[in-house]
Figure 1 (cartoon, helix red, strand yellow):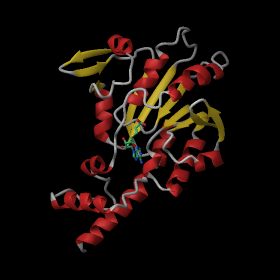
Figure 2 (cartoon, rainbow, N blue to C red):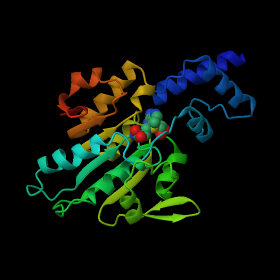
Figure 3 (cartoon, protein in one colour):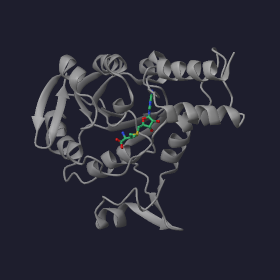
Length: 254
Ligand SMILES: C[S@@+](CC[C@H](N)C(=O)[O-])C[C@H]1O[C@@H](n2cnc3c(N)ncnc32)[C@H](O)[C@@H]1O
């Protein structure tokens, strides 16, 4: 098989499995370089190698990114959830969580609530990248990651070692990180139902049909609010959820 065909096949497989569209000439060059450097081309039955996932994913994130969603969670969603009608955990999914800043931003905000929540809280972060999930589990961040946090929040919740910011544990909540592909139905069966799904800045890398596939999965596993990034494609979300205009954007409800 020619090199060009191998590259095309691999790009098609990446798109089919992960949703990530790599259509620029520079993407072909990157995959070509990966192959030239001995990067593994997986058999059809094998998983995409970690090195390839690292190459194709954009993991940019930081604490309090698109902060209005965290405001909305604290000021509107939590008060709306009936805390006394049930003792079941309030379940929040961050998909994708990248290196964990989004999940921990939720925990940091929840920790500021003056009134103790009656129901337990479970925050689950999932991401395709094993490397990012390892980083999330380590909870060690650069100054750039924490730049949007207030100084007092950093002081109270991080210890600084060798220029890195180690986030404190949150024994008051359950926080879990899992490597997972949002298009994997077996993963969704394990994940179950959520009250809130944060899915920000991933759909920008997918095409409209993959976005729609993903939103259908969210719809089936959500009873509550979906928060998507301002740069994500909102057209399909409007077809499957009820949009609600908030001060700095649109959120969706089942
Ligand atoms: C730009 S980050 C967004 C992180 C965070 N939600 C934020 O807005 O700051 C995009 C993440 O999507 C993940 N990703 C891409 N395709 C995925 C898939 N099919 N399943 C799970 N995660 C995926 C990438 O690994 C990457 O970490």
